[in-house]
Length: 424
Image (cartoon, rainbow, N blue to C red; front, side):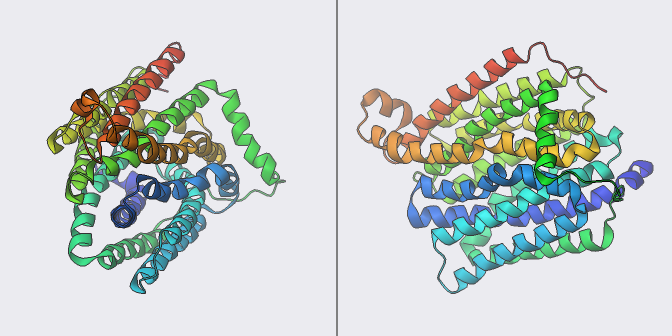
């Protein structure tokens, strides 16, 4: 145990403090979603926050990965963290002067998303440099653990701070967590394998296209990325619709509890995957876990009318996700050369995440413009299934998402039936 700690100590320091900073940022984002929905009452306007955050992934990820492979990873992470904190500070200043408008939030979220676009491939490579390969599955479980813990704590603490002390308190906590993570990365983390070579460098466009070329030559990785892109379309529409289902019927506290249950489920799943032996076939494990998620939560949100049913759905939908993430992480890290990971991960971001802003836009638009008006004039059968009043259209939308998610899983399970990934 002591040997494992010594080998993983640099990564543990980086992981724990970056997770703390992510917790602060997530609280700010959660509080801003509540603030904007209370101000506008529109699922589409609220969804635009996430659309603006993810849009830079679609536009800039390939070039960001090429630049990340050229630049010093630690400096890249430090600069991106600093600029993202400046965006949070801008929100606070506008709030203090009572000048904050939705369009300000969209611009600031886009800038924060751009910083994350550049930082994310650098942080992925940093993790690869710091983690011995034999610990990939275990550390992936720990990362899922921190993400799930953040999911548990974010809605509870953000809601409490927002309700009793306002956005000022939420942003203050966010900035404090940033300072801690920034100081540890700057002063205590050394990344190995950062020596520069004197050979000729690829041009930026050639460097960016090399990541796409690598993916074309490795069909299984590309198929998995496209599978997850379709899942992300459904999942992002889910995130856009969830506030529109719960907030018109209950308070932000219920929304917080549903999100907290998702965090509890992923926390449990993270502990399970950390202890589990490696599966015989990682591809089939990924397909099975996503099918479980898609075939449970959306149906219970569609037809359930009590918060406890939604909480049960949240648990069933999220408990297997850490298992999926851990197996996907092992496949990526063991198959992609370290000197290519920045470019390939960035291409992965573009291909896998371009559906997220589309999903948010589609989910918000369909609820506001199609399903809510439809349910306002619906017959007795639809109202018996999905309820009446605002929020019933969101419930109907969850049925559409449930059927879509199951269809995607079944189609890609069939496509990947002859592909296997055993332990290297």
